[in-house]
Image 1 (cartoon, helix red, strand yellow):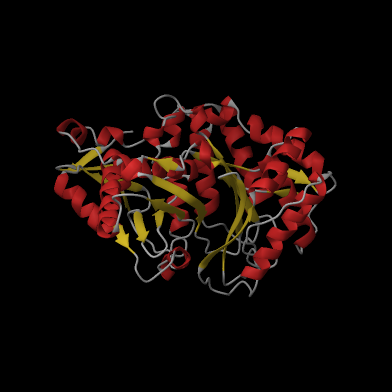
Image 2 (image 1 turned 30 degrees about the vertical axis):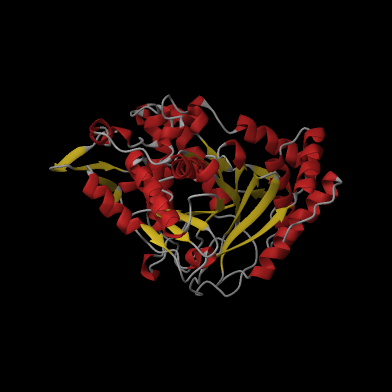
Length: 464
């Protein structure tokens, strides 16, 4: 990543392709003061021994400060829509950053923080003492879901084991520790436009993406094309441990993954509940690129960066649920990946950005396109593989008892997140309450659960 020193200690560089897209998306509803597609993560935790009252608050703040030092990408700020900026920090700068970004919430709850998700240049860590919860907010151009889980694992490690004191050497290396863009980290070539085959591949890839998924139909919504957004909201169903164990066993017996089973059930829900009569369901899915990055960017020290890419698996209405699940299992296991995709990545993001944000001419008399109301899906997998539920011992023991993740939605779309934590399957849907209500979201999730029960021949009991 090439940083240019704009003034003494102030460095600037261009956003990478996927960063630039998420930066644009975050600003879509700027006039409301709210961020679209901002990430949040909520962890409920319990402590023992020395963590009491003000001492716990102080320890949380120190752990957050340590994250800010060892992950300097947390202090990078946007510079307009296409660039980002970083000021080389020292102890006083880190303290000022913590004062701005560590917030004790004495009069609100996590869902209230999500509902009013503000546009901000910096991430923030909120402590809710009443419920013993922390809430992490960050723009999606800065970090992805797996990166967030890695980061919070390190946060609780610092909390339990003490926060290391920065040394002169680590202060000096801060700029070098800011993780590069996805294209740089995966080794995508700079001159793909000189290869006609790659250029054609990139254009076809994005044309298919927009035709099949970005502008696909979706679920009915409240209001019409003129209805302004309300508050970001979430509704979730948590399947208990015994039922989750049975579901996992049934999936293994059929040779399919849990994510693919849920995705196939989601397709069934969309086919049944949508007003459209589409013969195919195509979903925009964020897939984890971290396993394809060149070392050292595939490691936990590079948690703070957006190392995901969007893909669009498609399944047919006429295909059985089992057939869809098998197709999706193969897709998720690597059917989406190719070396040509990596080589064309810079062009893909360039064309994707053009298709999303450049004004398109409309034929005379043609109505404006309907706002998208499609349903997206993203899987975090087994959270416990990345995030340790217990840290420390004795007087500094910390245990995470609950985990939530999602995004702030300002459009008519819904985004279904799937993960397993503490042996329990979680289905959590994000939406905007101007267009969807809690009861409608629960019916939608209930439909998915019913399909899973029928097709896997298991009984799924929820905890809520």
